[in-house]
Image (tube, rainbow, N blue to C red):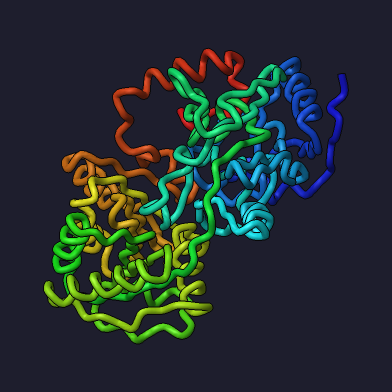
Length: 423
């Protein structure tokens, strides 16, 4: 059987860690994806599913790469029930396109990963990326109700459902979140959505030492304040971003507290956050709203993508350890590295923007050891390909790593989907 659509496209845009595919396939329907995978399975071709490639830098270099299966032509809403707050969408749909359609009915999908104009639904699920607003709304798995997946042999399978209360027992849909396209090709996803908030605002707070911010974060956790995000930035990261209509820095570290909700509750949260900040001695900037506030949100959202960075390290920590890790990172890699963190979710990204002559092996090992000692981990989200051969890309593998390998071997016995990317 011939592959339904074969596109002779420039393969440079599909290169993954220096490895280029022999061909690029551009299916437009679920049926064509199924036929394409059946063809690949029959010929034992190594396939990497892609959308617009915004997250190609995550993971190990592929051990084989014959076909780039590009799903960017598979876009659009399959089914939308505004009254039920449920939408089903094709995997190649950019997030921004989906958000515009939902906004017409006063709703949105509460995910804000970097580069929403390019990031596709399938890629967001496969990489498991959320964004700053996971602080209030949760991560991808909290909103995903069901998915349709094309298995490595071309069979089409649906997991989950199309209503909010549909799961009894083990929820298989979650297996595919963060799987990096190694278990199956995600072609369709169903999400629960939410009404758009009436208003939003962002409050900048400043401190010369991260310990003061840690004290405030501890108070916030015990208070009735419910931020949509709590983004911690060091001076180097703040200076790299192209801010417009934002206040001048008043300290070496900035904590941006964002709020979504009804106007009255947002006003109360802002006042309470300012009061708590005063108690611990933080400098308080003027609250932002309107276009200026939306611009700030877009900047911190996209900053996590590390588009201009040569090295991106992602620490996953207990939230109480974030500020201490920031200090360790600056000592290990220098104060020129940019740091941005989902501070109340325990996710810290450390970015080096200047090219390095050699891999910072000692610094990375030091940060990994620190993260593991406090109950977390450190992974390399982005690095020169040659460094990935010697540095711990996935940090310290979890105790469940062997179970994940067995799952991969069971679902993809020929090892044709994104081989070598995860294991």
